[in-house]
Amino acid sequence: MLLEADDVLETTEELAETRTTSRWKDVAIDQLGHSLTLGEILEILDDNDTGLIDLSNEILAVLGSNLMSKIDGCAYRIDSWDAIATLHRKYAATFAASARALEAKGDRLKSRILFNMKLRQFEQLPGEKFKVKITSSQSLAIKDEATSSLCVQYPDFIKRSYAWDKRALTAAVKQGSTEIEGLNLSLETKESIRFSPNKQND
Image (tube, rainbow, N blue to C red; front, side, top):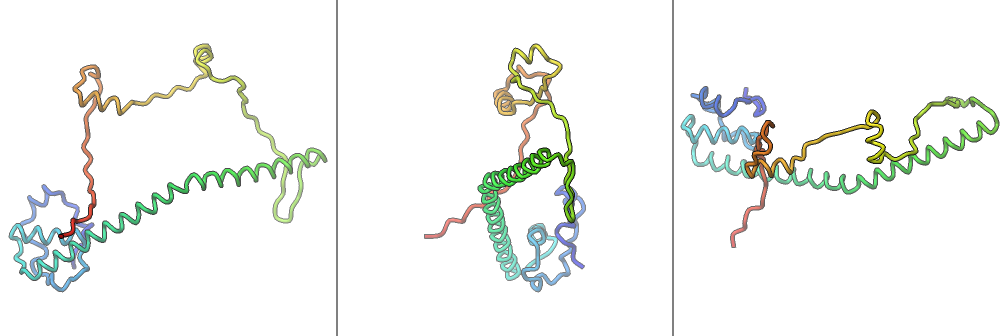
């Protein structure tokens, strides 16, 4: 039984140390067709390159065709997801405004019900499946803006938040600044992939 590509989790170093035979040696690869995953196709091609298996030119041509189909399929799928994400971001503000409008309508209806209940001195009203009653809660109303002078005057009642300026720190590290000694800083490289269309032959 063949393993799925996701089950092969060894690192490149582990593969180099442990792989002396190929799990594809006795497999009729030409009969697998498009059922191979991208990881499996790359593994088979790697095994052929390193001499663990010996594939015919016909099989290599089929694998190459399958590989190109996988790459194109991944590109189309990622483009589709990106397009949907862009559409969601585009309408996010509209949906948020609609949500606020609906919530405001609910708040206005609650206010009218509360006004009428208090006007007629009802603490509770029954419905067939629900009931409504007047409740109360307390919240602090601050009429003064938190100006700099008031912040100095009342430091115990001021919230403070700190955050690193990553843009400034990155520029300083790239320039070899010596003014940030004592901080554990390093530039980390993040690898990714990028799809681009192949150039058509004239």
